[in-house]
Image 1 (cartoon, rainbow, N blue to C red):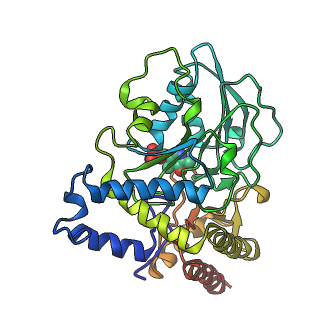
Image 2 (image 1 turned 120 degrees about the horizontal axis):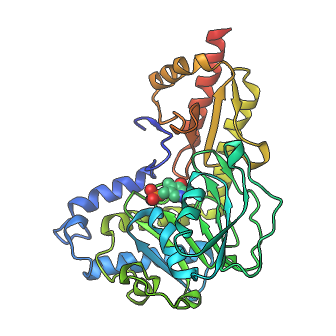
Image 3 (image 1 turned 135 degrees about the vertical axis):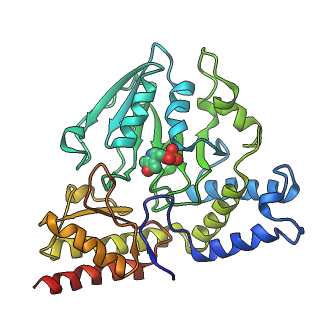
Length: 355
Ligand SMILES: *Cc1c(COP(=O)(O)O)cnc(C)c1O
């Protein structure tokens, strides 16, 4: 391992995936051409797309009523595509406002219909997940963000929805088990936990589409991509390929094991944050994210020192998001527990150096 990569996204990928992808860049399936140079309509790539879609369904335990798409435009384009396709102009969509991404999503929805923010922790700088609210059954859909990448909170139990259920899982997709079948639409930018930047995974129940009376531009209509199996236009070929390799890797380990590894890593780091008198967490304990661990120092003037200390030990990407400061260590699927141990040791050695 070159460094300990705690980047929030794009982020660390399994090393065996990176190695296989590197080989495919030079020569894909002994075709004499690299994966970057082949047609998306070639047999070889069609097989990649088919396998990637099938793996998502298999890992989520979903049947054929769901379609899996690999789209471009990032999760941010989904903020707009969802209301375009699911929110009638005279309708209301319910949003749980748990972070900057959730807030960006609901702002977009306001361009298409009415938005009911069922609860928000914005006034507390999104340091907790609101739990006491009701979702109106006549809402067009209910939108949640399962993991709040910037603040380090996560919905440890998913609320129930009395209406169509939509989830932004960008930063914890396939990091733990869920009953994925309670959702009607799930989306995730690949670059946090399941691949490189460039692909956005959308899982949609086909039966919810086609109910709008408005005109939807072709590229923004989910039906276009469902109908053509995510091949209406050129899909993100390389990114989809690396996602497919990562999905194989997740399947090899099993989602239950991945979940256990992620919980072990997060527990190790939170235990040290709680034990070490120099550090403290920034979020409500019961809402702590297993993916993005935010913390600060009790004496903020030491933070620059610790940043340098960590950098000398090859601990990369632990600065907090510019909107919150402090530290954020992202512990996505591919991050080995040895990297978390290295961060914990650095925190302990820093404590000793100040004693
Ligand atoms: C990163 C992130 C996004 C934005 O993703 P892009 O692919 O950059 O548009 C949206 N939601 C969540 C939860 C994220 O972590």
